[in-house]
Image (cartoon, rainbow, N blue to C red; front, side):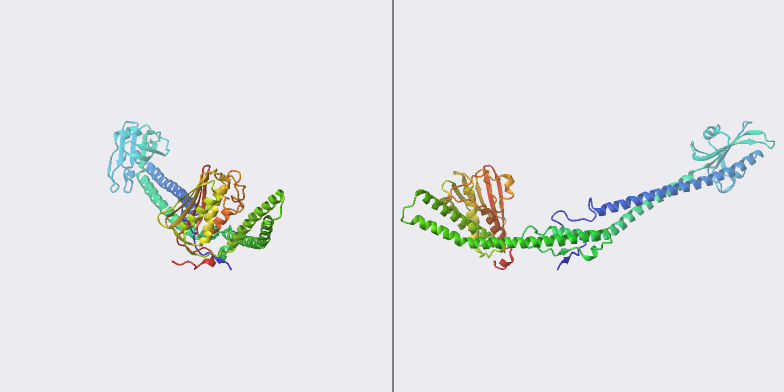
Amino acid sequence: MTDTLKSGSPPAGGGAAYRPFGRGTLGRRLVVQVAVLVAVVALLLSAATTVAVQQILMSNVSDDLNAAAGEVNRDLKYANPRGSLFGPGQSVGTFAIGFLDSGSVYPNVRIDSRARGAISQLPITTANWLRGTPADGQLRTLTLPELGRYRVAAYELQNQAGERQGTVVIGVPLSEVDRTLLLLMLAEAGLTVLAIGLAIIASRTVVQRSLRPLNRVAATAQQVSRLPLDRGEVALAVRVPPEDTNPASEVGQVGLAINHMLNNVESALAARQASETKVRQFVADASHELRNPLAAIRGYAELTRRSGEAIPPDTTYAIGRVESEAARMSALVEDLLLLARLDAGPALDIQPTDLTELLINAVSDAGVAGPNHTWSLALPEEPVVVWGDAHRLHQVIVNLLANARTHTPPGTHVEAALSTLDGQAVMTVTDNGPGVPPELQAQVFERFTRADTSRVRATNAAQGGSTGLGLAIVAAVVEAHHGQVAVDSHPGHTRFTVTLPTRSIAKRPDLAGQVTD
């Protein structure tokens, strides 16, 4: 039976917490793109509205100017310079300047829109500046000294007989137009900012809701990625929920593909586990069956060697080699059998164990087995006690010391040390031998891994030949005790470090509950 993940966002995978709108996320990019799109559309609409309103206002001003031009032309013909141009309702600042050929000038400007006679004289500098305006009737937008922006037009004055009398320049102020456009643009800017803000808020909500299925799919993938798939029996009970596997959507297609992939992975892991189980069972059975023949070989070889009959030297040597190789094969068989048992789930006798005593005994035995090496011991003042199997932990120490003795030349100094750090017991075995090649350090705790190319391997059976299983046994026993083992090596310095919790419950289910404080 499989479980489905219901969380709306992927859990943290050991790094920074997931943020749906963090830097580089799809949610953030979508919100930014929506905000930019709304901003561009709002700016385009504002620009189009401003241009349209400006055209309308300028058209109205031009209409007023054309209408006023006819009135001024008629009034000046009848010597009435204060004609209907200055009637009530006309914009303040409207002016009409008549330049008569006789030399007369009528520079009138409106200063009050309420009364017909509220006019004044146009500044003389402005009047002189307008004198040269072409009398072609074309509408122009000018910025006049002391007055600002105006819409102006100049016309030729004629008398009733059609004779030229001079020119007249008429202007309507654009201050109201400019003020209206300014207010309009301010309003558009405010509405644009408001629209962008609302778009960001709305898009965040919509995007977050839309990405929930994708987040659930990502959460499933992250949960599977944290499962220990490298060894042992693995149960892939996690699947993408059914609502996120609808092939009609893109997210559903991804979720469906992940579920298919998990099904295939689960089948492959089950096949691998079955194969590993068969191999372990074969190794255990073969090791068990080989013990008796090897014991018989060793017994007969020893019996032949101890017989009172004269044996040729070559035969004596051959029987000795048979006996030594049988002993080495027996040790290999015992190691293989031990690893098979550890793989199947070790039945450890968990008891309070004094590591100090184990280390003293192991170093003492190593000094007898390797008299050509220099051995030293560094212990804390107080005994270090952990929960564990004393026999297996003693085997860990013995294997590390044997590894240092076997793979280093005579005269090498080997130091075994014990200490405590943060509630954990730390054992180290350090030597000043040739070191482990860097390319082999990652595989040094795997089975049948040897570093014969750089660390001197003893060939004398009395020194203890290497089977390539010693460090693998160390790693398996330490893992069963909830500990860790590591190596740090370079020429002239090699250190194996074993870290064990001072109080722990073994990982394997068959050991649970065996440890109490």
